[in-house]
Length: 282
Image (cartoon, rainbow, N blue to C red; front, side, top):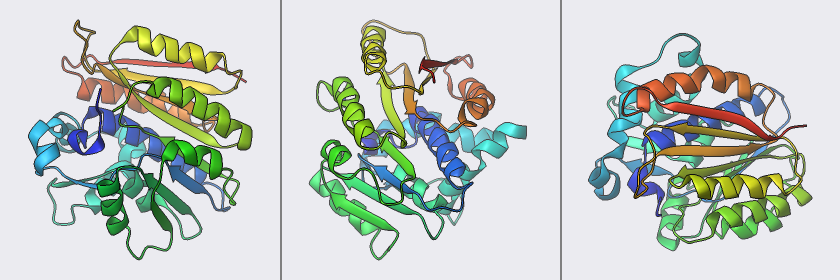
């Protein structure tokens, strides 16, 4: 599995992941106190949908392309509005040429008192990330191993915030690494919000991952998944998932509104499947 951001920018998984991300950040903004977002696998920040990577796969056409073309209405549109505003901010001339990754989406939402710490291990990507945030005093973009930072950069001085973990799954053992990283980070900062993205290919692999989360003993773990196609053999990317630890109290209710609409819009047959359940409650 390789889900390096540039090749899949703006695809269905990005849309779901970033809508969830936006809802969490919008919740954090309800209080005046400052917060910090730690993005452990930030990528380069901004992607050219006509460029070599995203243009080659064209996955964005069935993701953000569908959302922009067909739109949403009612409460769903209201919940997705900050996300779409962040996308439009990178396309001031209209159309859809550039797609913001998670660090730029977060940056679009930050208030003056909030901060973003964006990490990227790939040296070339880290350099591009720094360039995209050059001169921005609210953002620290660093060439650093995001897994290690979860042990050394928590808790943040703001005491409020989110850790987004969105690895490219270039190496084996990423699911086990997420469980281990959560345990380490949660010991240092039990009150933080943690969001772990994962691809859905092998249902047995996902089951083992969820079982590992259950055995951590950590409470308040919400599992969120959206599948756009039935499982196949050999497996392919069937869906997208996110584990949120200490989710905002409003998140579950908001996602019950927006995810079914995204499932209809993004699924191959218009009948995407949403799964949302508590791995561990209070």
